[in-house]
Image (tube, rainbow, N blue to C red; front, side, top):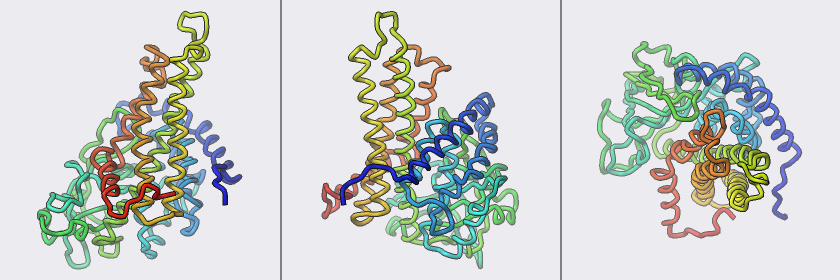
Length: 430
């Protein structure tokens, strides 16, 4: 069978539908929230846009067809997210954050919890606005959370009768507070099992053996005291100005044992697999940013002479910068599609599939920053004005190498681990 990079008719329609939604609905989002004074207020302002995304099937589109959703592949998700993120990063990241929040549940194989916890996302109608969050990151950092001899996760869970009692702080957990600071509809909460709260990690044990993941619902939070779940702070961000990733404190939060999604090595694996899929989707975001910067710079270069006799597109140095950007964005898009296709379809085992997702995230996110700067060089000082798109694009792009597993501390180290494998082959994934 020949290699075919053409989208199917269904994918082309999905791409056009996402583009239309982005243009007609998300196009007005930034003007709505940008003048509000705080990250929290701006997040609240995107609520009606998120509701429209839900009504348009974009949340149901995060769930596989086999579980009642409409998502047929991760490539489909990347196609839609690229169109949306190119128009508004905050609403799109909130939609994608719900997808990431659902991923451990989807991958877990836990049929009872899947049926119970996916229900609000599958049945959300025109007034629905369900949020999900993968609650993993912590204030002290989690790049080395599974390193033997390290401190490990500081959010701990102690078994007490039919419940687990959770204590600890979480940070950078997209969507986790919900719309009212009392929790998202579903939080996949990652903790470390201990005999007593705050106990240190055994330096001689395999850290993955003590990992536990809970399905934390709003109902469970409501059944606890108000002090058990507190939002301490919502960091003000340089980019993604209307997203939420607060500092949350859990104090003797009781979760019934029936909401344990996974334990031990299986729990650690489902989290790593969840972040593998999201790595390639970050590359789709990078494609969006490069595309937006390229379009803006090309339009300027064709229309402006900068005082000369010809539009600056006629200058080789300008054309070269634009060519480099276009090649990077096209390469990133194709690598994203290939990575997600390989992750779902193969060939090879998990490390060989993971490699391409890591490549996509690292290559795309780092080149997004470079490409925006190159496009600013094309335009010159005018690009530094706040009424131009470039400064905003740069602030958004700078986040991509840092979040969803920072490239230096997480993604390159995962890639390095794969390269060190005895059976590694440079043709993996192909």
